[in-house]
Image 1: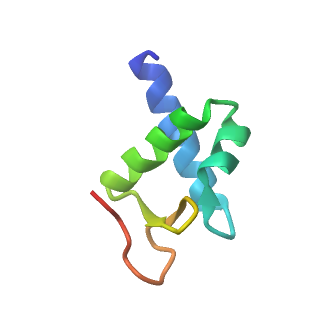
Image 2: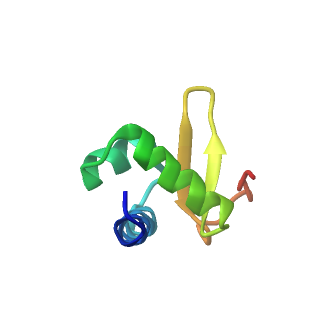
Length: 77
C-alpha cells in the first residue's frame, strides 16, 4: 500500500474507534473499512503503539477503545 493510502486508512480507523460506543474488534474495523483482517489488525496495533488508542488482549482476540475512554490503561508496545 502506498503511504498516502495508509495514512488515510489510519485516519479512518481512528475515527471508527473514537466514534464507537463500545470497544471495537479487528473484524469490525476490517468490515467497516473494506480491508483485509491483517491490514485492520496492523492499523489498530500501530495506533495503539503510537498511544492514540487503547488496546486490550482478551482470551479470544484484541479489542480497541479510544485513548480517553476511561478504565485501565492497556496500551501494549
